[in-house]
Image (cartoon, rainbow, N blue to C red):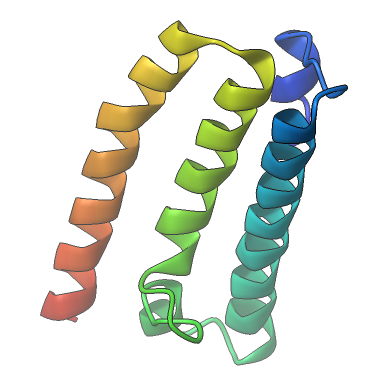
Length: 101
């Protein structure tokens, strides 16, 4: 999850990029907390889709936020345009799965 910004040659010198870096870091922490919860609480599949605080399906939302923040850091419109449809589909399918479980 951390290799992508380095491939896209991030520009972290601006205040906006630093905010995006903080957002990406927070999203990564949320993602790993979601997985830790899953592993610690007995690997129940429902935990993969359960809300974490106010964040619905955190294991779907966190990577999308992370990759969008990385696109902003790299100033890559192409990267953002790729992340948006895949991220939207990932979140919608995860929400659908969460409500059917």
